[in-house]
Image (cartoon, rainbow, N blue to C red; front, side):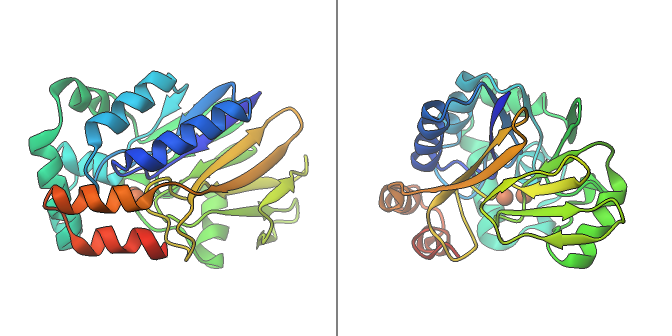
Length: 243
Ligand SMILES: [Fe+2]
Ligand SMILES: [Fe+2]
């Protein structure tokens, strides 16, 4: 099966449109979405409707989706992020809110686990980044591979049979059958690894191959719409630097 995986779209329709087209042309058979559909930018309805049209096999809930529904406190968000959530609450159509209400924190498809933030205490929205955190989180999921988002920086981490863990440099990688993996699929709508290109992941579960893809998109338009909506200039500016 060829999966197209993506996360942290944050109401950026220009990036989501580019990613949806790219996954289709790469031959994705199923789509998996790792959460944070809304927040930050100005097109929450268009993003949810596009994702709904992909008919994703599974979509998990992110912290921004949860905050929009009042299930995570806005005190945990910085000011521009909290303002964007309040703006989204007043602009989201009821049917798109209902779409978010139906999402769960974790999903599982056979050997594949999906979670927005981390397998350990998923509801606490931890940022899973450093070596120690990655090592610990391998203990909190069953199965071969766990995909997640939230950090907005893509990477592949591998655990060998002897328990040793390393974070790989590779963007494309052939998975070893006797290892386990934690894969961050990066961010569609607001990359933070110094590269403004939008990001998604292709996973071929038969060939056991994984690829982190980066793609140009029209972030100038996203930034312009952000300002026109009265949202944060800081959020608009960071699209250009990917930081
Ligand atoms: Fe996010
Ligand atoms: Fe998040």
